[in-house]
Image 1 (cartoon, rainbow, N blue to C red):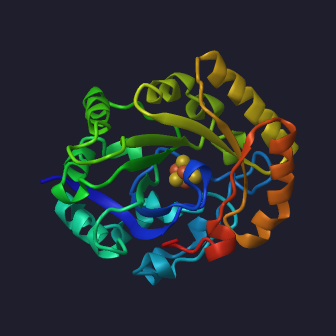
Image 2 (image 1 turned 180 degrees about the horizontal axis):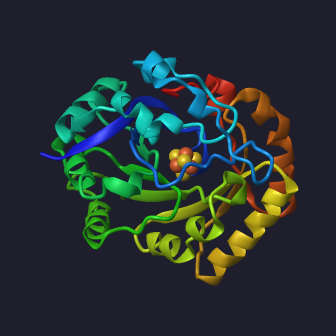
Length: 284
Ligand code: SF4
């Protein structure tokens, strides 16, 4: 039986992108190919905020401090926090999902497979999870990805087949890739982070949209260059601008400006509802 290292598994409302407001199970896998230590920092500087958190003081995600710079889900990939993330069998994951769904079965909820980077290490294991008999009623999946990991052929084939609804399901199943492409403000090099051909290949499997985290005019100018590169490669999906801000004080400084910027350029605005609603605490 397959096992997946799970950083968090919780039930909440999707706060970002296409499914904003939809009740969702969040499956946060452990591991990422990036660190994104540049978020919230002056250009060229890297945050050490998470580095200064002592992992030995915490035995539960819910107790971990929030950070206002760097990656706001640092514990889902930083090896220093790996012991907070158990390796669970797909059966155990499904049992936990059934416990947290309000009716103990899939109704209108969707699943968000997030990270870390969920397409980094677990593509082989997801078919076991998604084929489990108790997952039969699931109709919609979102992968929240940084858009740098290619789908393996076998996982792509599996997802294509999964979209065919099982007997008795009235509507089609949907797969979405919410691609949060990392601009230079993340601290990650452009050539590592902007992979148009990888993202275009997701469009063969499901609906794909790009989501750029914006804090300054420079970020928007970088986003425009990235959008041009994705379009040149044939990307057809929507583009969202989303305000930076893992904590409320930072988020509320620029959410309206980013909304106005999105309007001005005919792009979509994504909020981060988890920040005003739940303070972006772990498990929300
Ligand atoms: S890609 Fe996402 S999870 Fe990975 S370090 Fe960057 S913000 Fe964090």
